[in-house]
Image 1: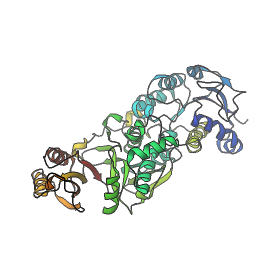
Image 2: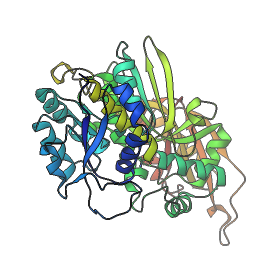
Image 3: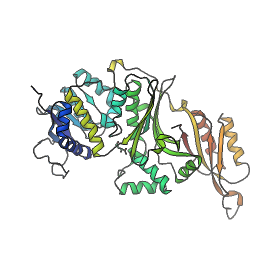
Image 4: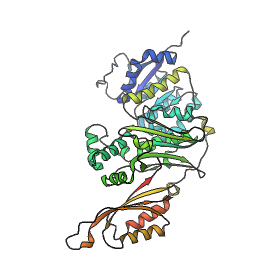
Length: 438
Ligand code: HSE
């Protein structure tokens, strides 16, 4: 006898929730064929029952309190699309797992911060905790790392994990405008949130990177050890200098395994303009992974939006309908390794440093003396033209210079930047951007 339909309860009917209902209905026949049984929404919960969402919810059980989904007898799987690492979202996921109900979520903050305990709860309950939609929307990267690459030892994973930042940086490069102007326009067009800090300060990308690093290196997810910097300090001048030097600026998430352990960091990077990741523009995301046997691969696609994110949610539901049960982090909680988190101060790389300095004799000598004393080797330097003479004293005009270093330790570079910033001839806060091979 064919199994009965898998009954879904969805908490949160925003863009992704409504998109999930739409995909399940539009592709019902195809999903039933692939899952071996029908997958149907039976219950929903959202803040406002009367809001127009472009989907018909009239035949569905409605719960004003999302927690009721966890114990609804007509719900087999709870889909959490509320968002946020704490509060109702966390309470609902815990309640569903306590009731031995599988959970599908798109909640990156919840998984990045509480994913280890939640996976242990799911294991004890013998049910799935699935979160394909939490990282890079429509790119099936969780499955790619956890299942497709399960045979290999990965050395590196990361990429462009935030579409809002990539859109802003792309617009800055294409139009020559500054960060604030592009952000304001992106907000007006609905591409950036009214409060953009989670995106532009790198937090959203850091949540996703923490999840990718845990999967790639088989260790418990550890958001607290991710070094996070956003894109607010990138100016139009940096974009122009980067282009002149043959680079593009991207906000990258980087997780790398070394002899010391694992480094995880999110920050703006200069990447060679010819590198594949530099070609990923606008709202697109890209994930790069590198393993001993597989070599290097890159997946590119839409990291947000109703359709792409809903396909990830429904893909997880199809796995559950098929009866597939994969450990959330690729191995049981007790089998994960305790790799050391390498602090940012120990990371290595080349650096770009933009300074605004007085245009007078001896300035470069003072700056290079600091670099020498900190053991940082200079690779190249750019200065264009000359400062306009100030009316009272021709030596006081300001001019931008850019220094590019050879590979060095972050701690040495931070020391050098601190000392350079304190020089009287340096007129503004320096902008330091790390250089990555791409
Ligand atoms: N706000 C994210 C982005 C999508 O801009 O990529 C959801 O994580």
